[in-house]
Image 1 (cartoon, protein in one colour):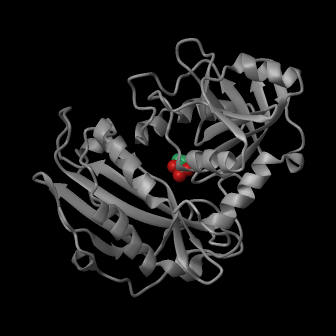
Image 2 (cartoon, rainbow, N blue to C red):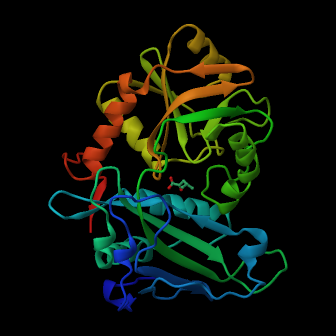
Image 3 (cartoon, rainbow, N blue to C red):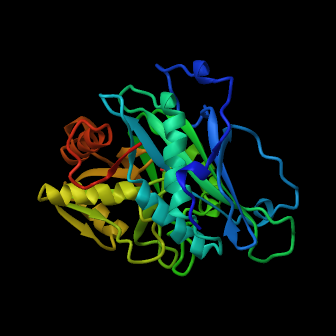
Length: 356
Ligand code: COI
């Protein structure tokens, strides 16, 4: 289908809620901006999307995704540049990843005209919702739900694609403490670990609640065969600085999410001449590096979290405490470099920023 920009019907609110946001104290995921985009898929095609005031959904209790979790989402961010431009970071990469998730979950492709052009118009309309202070942005959440009214188990035929946005501060406002999980499993080969399917997050709630009770912030998942190789952290990809190399699990398997921030980090490090290895990394190798004083830094990457330093890693009784985060060269440089590009303060030589 082809949706020309004029085909997106816009129904503007007369009652902005922007004044409810405390610009000096923005948490993650608490406020939703004035408008949302919504598009329906039926009879094998997408209908033209609409931008409407943010509203609740009215759905039958028999709706497919309530029962079987046929639902996927993305996370994207828009930043306010010093000259006032609204810049979306790498939306095409999220669009492509959404369609990879859609294929695996038997859902239709979302056309570029809906995902990208719809997002552009939504952000243009709600640009005042992009916060301006450092470490803040407008978090953009595109998602798709299966909405057949049918409780038999079969791939649905009707879908809803929605984009909502939310002014956001840092996801983690402190360095995180990580528990290496060797009881529960996030992803198996052949499964949906590489997708942003709702179920990947739903299944993590119980193990995460258990480790939070023990005082940890997040789980580092390991492979399901031997619990030997690290995969990713609850909401992020993971990187370790060992000696003078940066190592991250490779995505050539279908168990790891192909993070857009992950890719940006690898690209920036390689541009700077740092060796980045994408490969299997065992928890034994991490422990040995720690004992030898070679585990210099560890951090998670993600759209919501950006770069999240890991100050402590616990595996069984082995508590690995890393050097003070302020002394880290790589993660702190990356955080600054990425921020400078995202906020449009530094030339974007990779074509990552999308001006609204
Ligand atoms: C993101 O980083 O955008 C995510 O989707 C992770 C989490 C907030 C679910």
